[in-house]
Length: 384
Image (cartoon, rainbow, N blue to C red; front, side, top):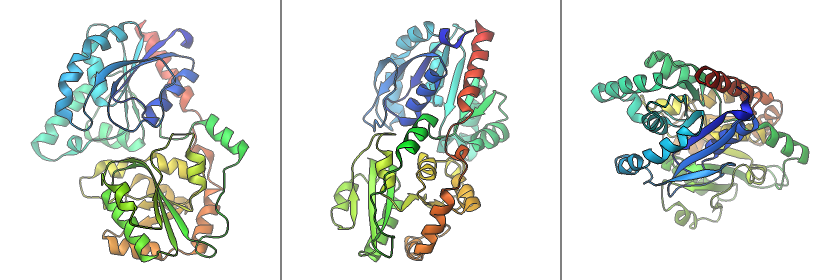
C-alpha cells in the first residue's frame, strides 16, 4: 500500500508533549496521512502536533484511578476515529490498551510507543508479577512495539516479559531538519569569556523539573559558590511545586518559566556551560532511571554543552565513553556539591572539545524514519 494512502491515527494521553508531536512529524514526513485524538490535561504543552486533532475530553493529571471514567467515556469517539484509519499509533501502554478495547473486532493494527517503564511494572512481589502477566498479554496483542531506549526492549520486554511482539528502537534524538537548520545558522553563544576564570559557571536544569533532590543539590551548590556559580532553571515545575518562589531568595539562581521545543532550545543551550542531567540516587528497583535516556542528553550533545550524569544511568555510559561531562556517584547532597566544586576550567574545555567530535547518529535521527515507514507499510499491507 502506498504510504500517502495509509491513514494513521495517533492516540495521545496529552496534547503538546514534545516526543508525541515529534513522532507525528516523523510519520507525516514518511508520507502518511495522520490525525490525532488526545486527552486534555493541565500539563506542559511544549510542542503541539502538526496534524488535525480531536479532543477526547479532560482527564486528571497523575491520578490514574480518577482517569478511568473519562477514558471509558472516550471509547466511542476513539472507535469512530479508528474506523476511518488504517493503523493506530498509541503513545503509552494506557492509550494502546484503550485503542485495543475501542477497536475490538475492527482488525486495525496497533503500534504502541513506550517512553517510560512505570514503577508498578517492575515492582517485586505478587502485585508486580500480576502486572507483568497482564503487560505481556497486552503487548503481544499489539502489532509493533516502538521503544525510546534499547534497554526497554532487550531487558524489560524480552528478558523479563518474554514478549514476542516485533520491536524497533527510536530514541529521543533530534530531528535531522532541525539539526541542519541550526547548524547552518550557528548556535548562539551569548556567554563571553571562560567560565570559572572570567565569569561564573552557568548550569542549566531544563525540561520537566520533577526531581527535588536535584533542586536541593543545585541550591546548595549556588549557596556554596555565590560568586562563581549561576543556576538557570527552565521548564515545567512538578517538584517542588513552589520552586519559582524558592528561587527568588537567590541572586545567582533564575527560573525562566516554560519553553517551546525545539524553537527555544538554541537560546537555552547556547547560554549554558553545563547541563544538569543527573538523577537522584538510583535505588535497587529504580529500573526506569537505569534504562531511560532523557531528551536533555541528546540536546546537550548537539549543542556541545557538557552534561552532569548519574552513574548507573543509561546516558552515563555514553558520557563516560566519550568523556563529555561529569558522572556523579555520590548520593548525599553535601558530597555531590563537593564533587561539583572540583570542576576546573580545563575539565569544561576538554568536555566541550569532545562534544564537538561526537558522531551525529548519537543525537540525530538518521535511518529511523525509513525503518518506521517500512514497518508500518508492512503492517498495512498485511491487514488490507
